[in-house]
Image (tube, rainbow, N blue to C red; front, side, top):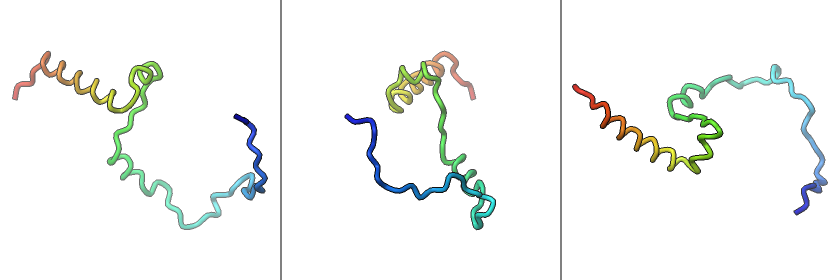
Length: 76
């Protein structure tokens, strides 16, 4: 496979953009919606290697929750 990409398209993007002159945008408009609607965590590289996908992570955490529940039963 050729790693060099032959692209004859002309680059129309500016080297720099002055965002201070842009109007109508609202910084952080969806930040609260994002924070309440997601629960993302970043795994350390060594941990990520042990779990190939989100299903594996969820299964491991559910198993840990069961073990913890058996070890420390909650009294109400």
